[in-house]
Image (cartoon, rainbow, N blue to C red; front, side, top):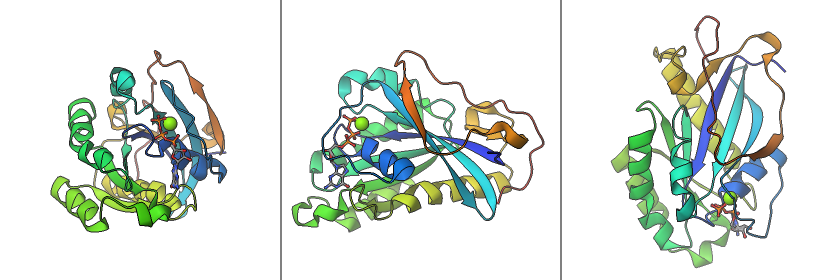
Length: 220
Ligand SMILES: Nc1nc2c(ncn2[C@@H]2O[C@H](COP(=O)(O)OP(=O)(O)OP(=O)(O)O)[C@@H](O)[C@H]2O)c(=O)[nH]1
Ligand SMILES: [Mg+2]
């Protein structure tokens, strides 16, 4: 299936916050109850439509465990968007956000759009971080913010699609799409491969995205 643009995303945040479940809900509309610890990095992709333009999202789901942190860092390069996820029922995952942001600022390109996500909104009775605190953190650090539930799918579409809309706005404002470090590839007819794909990637093999030809134009 052809696409106008491909955007590369990464999903980051502490182990167990629901990164893989968010991806699974977005690509397959399924929820997984067990914590199937991500080893290294996994990926999925899906087409979305933003103002009638087909955008392919290529999403890299990273391992939150500390021991994988150096591998995760190698995936920031060339990402157009990041979902930075914490668990609203575990305060320490919110407290670690600054350290994740520091990594992102150090290793990602400065134009990367970061969406802050407070996940597990369905278990509000165990909430340890208020919505207001999430909003405040996002405001302070210039991030977009949403609370989601990978279980009920609440706001999951919005998290991925709103991030793409912000990237589209940046393209319309003149972001250089020919610079592969921006994590954007210009489509070329039937170059896309369709929705709902996933797979496992050798943790040692850093992805290479971008460098696509074609004229830059209005995105959305
Ligand atoms: N109630 C509820 N549970 C969730 C939600 N999202 C994830 N979980 C559960 O949280 C646990 C961890 O989810 P994962 O998606 O595997 O977490 P992860 O962030 O990918 O963890 P790592 O791969 O170790 O970094 C699993 O038991 C999920 O079922 C949610 O929105 N609501
Ligand atoms: Mg995972």
